[in-house]
Image (tube, rainbow, N blue to C red; front, side):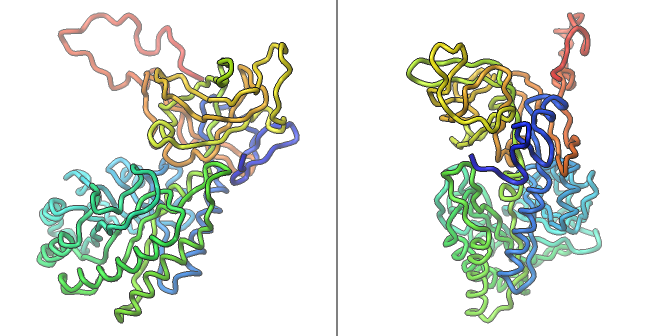
Length: 463
C-alpha cells in the first residue's frame, strides 16, 4: 500500500498519522473517523504554489476548491497557507465567512446561483464571481446597482477539450451543464458592457478531474488566451485574468499514475505563454483551482470491523461500521482504494493455517459497510493479514469528496473529522448524534400523537 503524508508504522506496530496513533484516535473519537493530516495538506499546497511560481513568469494564484472538503476550521488552514478559496454554494460561502476568510480571496462559483446566493456574494465583497449562464448575467445586472466598488466577474466557458477520465468527471466538453459556449460568452460580454457596477476581468474553464496527461492543459491554456482576446474585443476593454480550474490526477492506489505537479504547471504555462506571445498580449494573471490534489491524500478513514464472512472459493467479506453513506465514490465512480489494518500494520499478508479458527486471508477481501445496498463497497480485492472482528481498518486518500458527499442514508449519523499535527489531535467536525438526525423532523398536525420516546430519552447515540 502507498503511504501518504506523515503516515508511518510506529513501534507498537500501529499506523500513525500526524504523530498520532490511529488506534488511540479511534478509541478517543470513535469510528468511523475521518483523519485529516495537516502537514500532508500544507506540503501539497506549497508544492503546487512553488510549481506555478517556477513555471509561470506572471502573477499566479492557487485557489483551493472548497467543494472537495470544507469546514470552518479547515478554511482557517487554507487562509493561513495564503491560498484563495473557491466556493460553489451559499453554504460553502457561509462557511468561509464564519471562518473569517478574507473576502477578496474568494472565488464564487455555481451553475445555478440563487438570488440569495448572489446577494450573499455581493454583500460579502467576494473577490471574484464566476458567471455561468445568460440568466445569471441578468440577475447580476439587477442586483449590483449602488454597491460601491465594481464586482469583478469571470465568464465560465466550455473549452470543448476531451480528456481521459470517468464520464462523470468530465466538465470541459461541449455537451456540459457548465458554462458558456464561445458565442454565448461574446453575448454575455456585450450585455455586461452596459451594466454599471461590474467589471469583466477574465475567463474561467475547467476540464474535469483525475487528468494525468499534460497535453490537454497546454491546449486549454492556448485556447483560453485566444478566447480572452476575442471576448475582450466584444467587451471593449482588456481582460487580464484566466482561471484554468484544476483536475490534476491523484493516485489512490499503487497502480495509479502519480504525475509530478510540475508537469501540470509547465503545460499550462507553455500554452498560455505561447498563445500570448503569438497574439502580442501580456501574460494574464493566472488562477488554478486544485481541490482533490490538495486534500485527498491528507485524509484517511478509520473503520472498526464488526463481522467477517468467508464465501468459499470466492472472497472474504469484512463488514465495517462505515458505508456508502460516508464513502460514496466507489458506488458513484467505481473508485479503487487501498487499506491496511491500523492495529496490526506491520503484519505480513499470508494465509492462516486451515482449521485455525480465524478468518483467513486466503481470498481477496471485500470491505463493505452497513448500508442496505449490495453496492455498499468501500474497498474491493484487498490483500490483508487474517482479519477478525474488532480490527481497525484504515483506508487512505479519503480527504476529498468523502465528508463532502456524506449523507444520513439509513439514518446513520455522519462521522467526526479530526485534524492531526505533530502528535496533537482535535476536532474539525463533531460526530452527529441520533438527536441530530431528528432535529429538523416535523409531524403534521393530523398525525400528531404522544411521542413513544422523547428525543434524547431511552436511546444512546454512537460514541
